[in-house]
Amino acid sequence: KKYGEDAKVAVRNCRRDAIDKFKAMKKNSEITEDDVKDGEKKIQTSTDKFIEKIDKVCAEKEKEIMTV
Image (cartoon, rainbow, N blue to C red; front, side):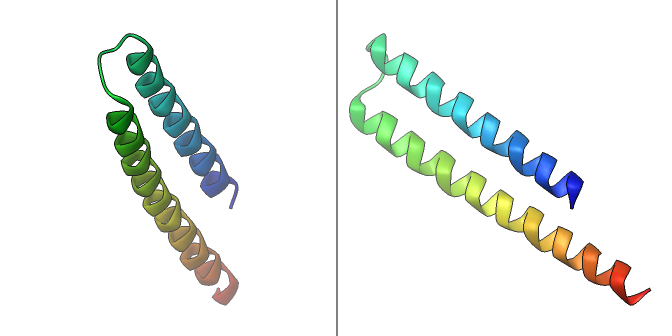
């Protein structure tokens, strides 16, 4: 469980950093507001899926431990 929670924190930190980079690019007029929104949506979707997989693996491992 601890490793799963640590992994999710790391993923969320990466997500925040990536979104911050998109916003910085917008300030420098390198990309449009639509690009920022699209990028944020893709980052959110990808990280949510990754976090779901972390939860699934942790649940499976916990179940294995309980049956031993």
